[in-house]
Amino acid sequence: MTILLATLNARYTHASLGLRYLYANMGELQPRTRIMEFVIGAKTADVVERLLEAQPQIVGFGVYIWNVEETARVVAMLKRVAPQVRIVLGGPEVSHEPEQQDIVRLADYLITGWGDVSFPQLCRQIINGPQPLMKIHAGVQPKLDEIALPYAYYSEQDIAHRTVYVEASRGCPFKCEFCLSSLDKTAWPFDLDRFLREMDSLHARGVRLFKFVDRTFNLNVRASLRILQFFLDKLAAAPDDPVFAHFELVPDHLPDALKEAIRQFPPGTLQFEIGIQSFNPEVQALISRRQDNDKSAQNIEWLRTQSHAHLHVDLIAGLPGEDIDSFGRGFDRLVALAPHEIQFGILKRLRGTPIIRHTQAFGLVFDPHPPYSILATDRIDFPTMQRLQRFARYWDLVANSGRFAHTLPVLLGDAPFAGFLALSDWLYRRTDATHRIALDRLALLVEQWLVERGMGAQQAAALVGSDYAGQASRPPRREKPQSDAAPKRQARHMTA
Ligand code: SF4
Image 1: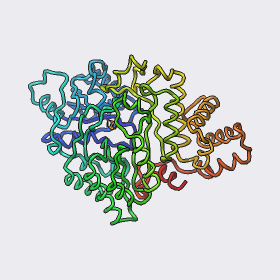
Image 2: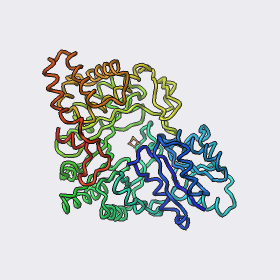
Image 3: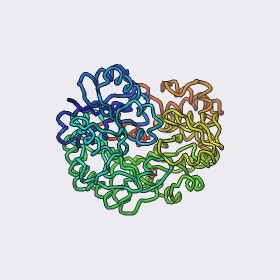
Image 4: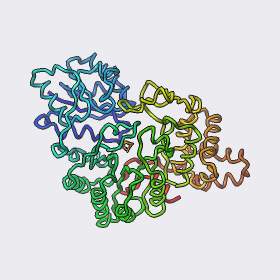
């Protein structure tokens, strides 16, 4: 009588926080519950075979935008070969618009929203009867202090080889219409003493990389300060065995007390993911994003110049009201602030998000298949959106990788967006590919591009060589460092 908690993670290194929450809250059912994680790309039949080896009575699947198609195939096969197994779905991808989804049609039950309490309740009903009458169950949202915390269920294997995700709060008070968190209306904090005790035991067990999934880490400054102080204390106690912490920040809220704490972190110990999304005030108003652009820019500049934090800043192309010129201006403004990485994303229509209210007025055309990327708007046609998609990919390879630190400023010149778009178009014409371009080939192509733009061949070779020398033989980037807490890409940015 086994209950399986299963999901397909995007990578092996991503240990599912959601499954561990469910496991922690199974109560008397916990001894018969097991977590089984897979990685997307696994063969459907192999996944089904592994699941059935455990002889489950119930399988609960965590469904996300990155795994919904593969999970649907798993569910379909499971239902064919073992129709007696009860299948329960949960997760953000199936919590909205369930009536439109094949995977929901195939499954027995669906819990929308929070599953911490509702999943074990549903399992009890399935096991003990009477059988649940409804297929779709709205997840109960308990107070956070009624939820058992999941951190003890990161195994030694997880701690040694995978990213450990943690959360000090759930939800977000902001309303950005492209984001699922806009439906939360507020943020709920976990009791901080209880949370920090768990962080302490994770640290004692060897965790050195803590990835916070809180949507707005710096919302409650007192709580943020205590969390930062926790890590500063760990760093002070063992400077040779440093921790590395990753947080998501809202960019226009960085009071002096927070800055003072941030300033104390040494290089390679702190990373911020900062959402700018758009610098265009009209676009921000359309998508209900409240953001003080000048304050945001000042804070990014302060972080870049006055702290050692590694900065990863997000922009989104394809938002309603944004044309290529206004996007380019925002991109150039951000490049001038010199964050270590710019995560250039393409708008996606996440199920349940209110962005679709602009569909008609702004001609939004989304791919009907996950990840539901925008294909065209009234201001950016399909071919141009394709160019932007490729730009994003090449930007990751050339700029975010940190492998062309000396060459990049020359590539960008005084018009970064236009300069890199020209390179991106040229790279695509030359390679017909955006993936599987080996580093040595990419370096050669960048060198050729510089020559085409008028640089002398020797100078171009020397410039690219100054970045590239010896890098091709470096081992691939590790996702989960332990002895040296800063991930390799950050390390490259900090030494550039
Ligand atoms: S984009 Fe960020 S700030 Fe806006 S609703 Fe989502 S999580 Fe909150």
